[in-house]
Image (cartoon, rainbow, N blue to C red; front, top):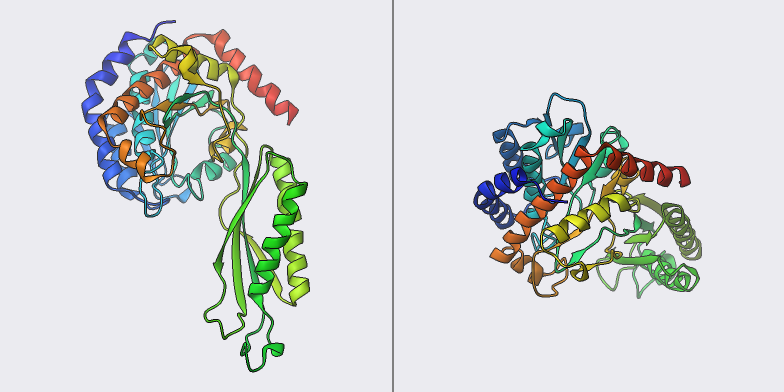
Length: 392
C-alpha cells in the first residue's frame, strides 16, 4: 500500500495556509452552535477548492455540507469537521485541528478522485461538546447514502478507533415551597433535600450497575440563602454505558430514584434531556485496520499505535449506526496531556500539533482513496457494517 503522491503533493502545497487557518480558529474559540466565524472560514476554504457548499443545513446556522462530484459512478466518501470550543478553556479538545484536518483530507482526495470515481462530502458539524449536530443530521438521514465516514481526533498518542459510551444528559428539577428556615421550617417543602436524596440514591445505585456504566452530575441550583427553605433545586447528570439499550435502562432507574426523592420530600419533579443523547460508536474494523496500515506506511511503527479505548461519548456514535465510520486518534503533542485541559490546549497550538494536522489529513485522504479505488474493499467495509446493524 502506497500513499498516493497526488494526495501528498496537494496537501503539502497548502500546508502553510491550512496551519495558519487552524491557528486562526484556535485563537478565536466559539461555543457550540455559535461557531459563525469558524464555520464560515471552513466553508469558504472548501469553495475555494471547487466544492459546492450548502450552509445552514437543517436550520442549524453553523452547519454545512460541502460536495464535490467526480461525475463518475463510485463511492461517496464523507469527512466530518468539528470546530466548537469549550467554555472558558477554548480549544482544549483540539477541534480547531479537527475541522481543518477534515477540509485538507477532502481536498487531498479531490486531487485523485478522477481515478476512482464517486463523490466527496464534507460535513460541518457544530456543537460536538453539547447538542451535537451529528445527532440531528443522522436522524434526518443525511449520512444514509454515504459509503463511509472518516474523522480523526488530536491526542497525545496514536490510537485506533475504539469504543465510545452511549450517553443521556438528564436534568432533574424539584419544586417545593419556601418558608423561613428558623421561624417556621415546618411549613416549607425543601427542594434541595430532594436533590441531596437523589445524589444519595444514585450513589447507592452505583453498586448495582455494570462496570462500563458512568453516573456523574452537579447541582446547578440549590437555593438562594441559608435562612430560606429553597422551593427550587436542580441537578444535571450524565448517564453512560457501552450500549444504548443499557444506557436507557440506567436512565430509567435514575428517574425512578428521582421520583422517590420527590415522594419523600413532597416535591414535584420535572425531568428533561438538556443535551442530545449520543449512541455508542460502532467502529468499522475494516476501515480502522486500513487507517492503521496507512499510519505505518507513513512511518509510524505498529508498536506506537495503541488499542482503541473508551474516551467518553461522541455524537459520531449516532453516525456510525447509519454508515461505516471510524474515529482514530492522531498524535499532535509529545507530552501525555489529557483532552479538556489547558495544557493540551496550549500544546495544540504549537508547530508540533500543526505537523500532526497535516499528517492526519494525509492519512484520512489515503484511507478514503484506498476504499474508493477497490470495490472489493468497499464491499468488505459495507458487509461488516450490515452485520453490525443486523445484530442490533
